[in-house]
Length: 213
Length: 213
Image 1 (cartoon, each protein chain N blue to C red):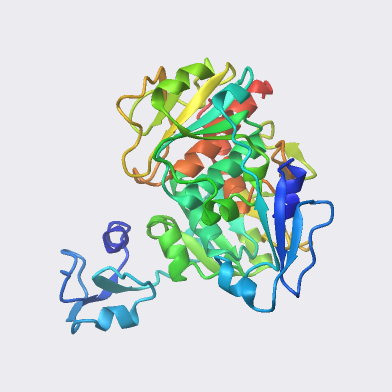
Image 2 (image 1 turned 135 degrees about the horizontal axis):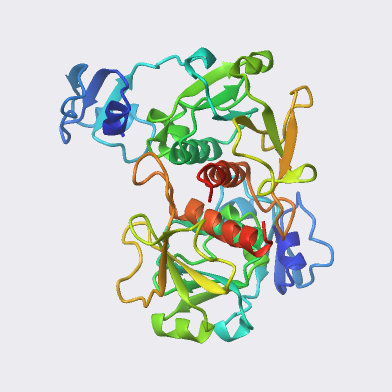
């Protein structure tokens, strides 16, 4: 994971190293050796890795997303596993950034970092964004819905847009000025797809359409 | 979850009911009232639901999949969360069945049942299948690969096929007679998509193509 942060260009401030581990080469930052069994007490997992790094939050803002063509906006997505998966899909699909509206789970929550499998360090994430700031993206807001809108496979997703995904419990806030709705037609029960799977499908459909596939 | 099993036509053999709960109406089976705090000791979660049901395993076999046109085959998929998500996608895409080769995680593992969000009860799952039995499906075997094959969006997925997904650690067994390979082109790192996300993308691409979208 620390290698991923370094590969993603993140600044490592410090590495804390268990006697069983070695600092990550080339990562930089202060290296501090821990006494035996200290890591088990300070880490958040039962079987921690032998090196723990403190990384500087790069403090991305919407202005850092220059002429974006595909952005994922999370409106209060609360489950760390879902946000981690969204970050993986976002990275894999090559989105320009992921914007988290206020009320979403903290992307630096250890469960999100682990569920993202390192993707957090490779995709721009803008946190704690207010609804009115979204207009700075200069993109139409496309919301997903189970019950209204054009099927995502027949919508034109080749043009630039921001995909808005709603919270697991409440969906998309009524106050959000959604420009267009898309739906994901499926058989089975209403709740059969979760927010992370839906995000994966729509961003990869955008990739497909943009490749002229 | 018990309601899902009933809705999916599963036979409930017994319901164990905590004093704080009520048996699920119409579920059938013996109803046994538990003394206070017994549920906390027998359930596998920290905050168990107040009703626990014993359901009869329907013992599906490959022969029960009649003229299938879309089947997901898991070759030793080991992570319960991944299999649960695969079952959700399979249900949502309306596949005819999910076939688990020997060595895959037990679909009745409580973590799979929970991750499937009830989908386990709505999709046919065939367990403990040997490699040579796959020919009984009468379907070409399509394997996914990160490094070979046609991109999944330009492959013809409108014809009947069985999608083979490999284990997280080892991929698809070399002995499996794969007829055709498809790849999921993505930017970012090699490991950016996991087996569950890849399954979701391919089965929904099949749905898209079959709808003529």
